[in-house]
Image 1 (cartoon, rainbow, N blue to C red):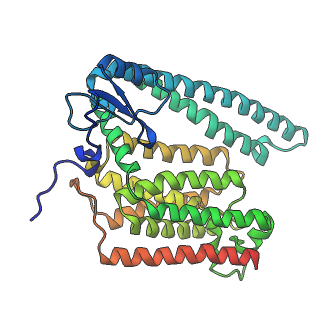
Image 2: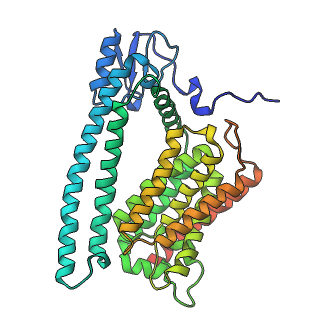
Image 3: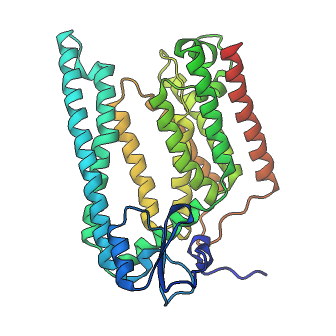
Length: 387
């Protein structure tokens, strides 16, 4: 029988490449760019002040490259780097918060001048949504990063190293299915720009009228209300899909996304019967729920800080739905989220193993069928719009 590994795949030393022998110290940046140094002091200066990303470093003590968080000697350099990054993020978020805060006030004043309750105005809701997404949430994240950097010490540096290893490993995975789903979203989105929003919704959206064909449950998730709507869903799918495909395998990404988008469609038709619905948010939130359930059941597979980010994502989604209730389909979001969570709880039993679940033949067959259904749905939405 094979021996159970002691660490998950992302924590194995082999995740990082062998260090060069041309210099005792150095740093690895994006696109495999390497900067070499003759002394630890020079490496410390680079880590603390370089505008380049620092994905890994090497020193004479290690055989391979390691995350900078693995070198205790770089503690002060890392603290300065993290504080500088948090300061820049704080400045950007504060500027966005002030700008969109003014926009919220202006939209509220404009609504009142037309005898419209501000909370019922879609313009106020959109402005508040942007304030939250590009202002207040990033402001909170910058505050947390600054507090974390100030509290950085040799003890909590270990957890920082684990998360750095996890992120590095995840970025190195071949994640073709996630990019296929992204391509389908963008492909249909470009067709929408061509034919126009109203025409595309009439052709393939979930209209919720008596006699509407059931295939609209499958085509509506590939349509979006505007470029911002598409961009937000694509960004969410990119992050969550890559993580799901890395940890759970491509079949479950396709199956979970399909189940969640259908559940979101059923939920919105039941609870919001008077408004047409479009968007992949139900499927994306389903992937979030699936990941949250999976990582709670397999806690040794991911760092603790990574799991907290998913929980924070759920809270952020709740807050976004609250401020944007006038134009955000919270029923579809909740239906997709709960369906994804249920999928993980049913399909993946609790385990203390550090091995990732291995897809069996049935998983691959069902995942392949889900992929065919999703691809056919996107193509059918395209055809309905342009025919």
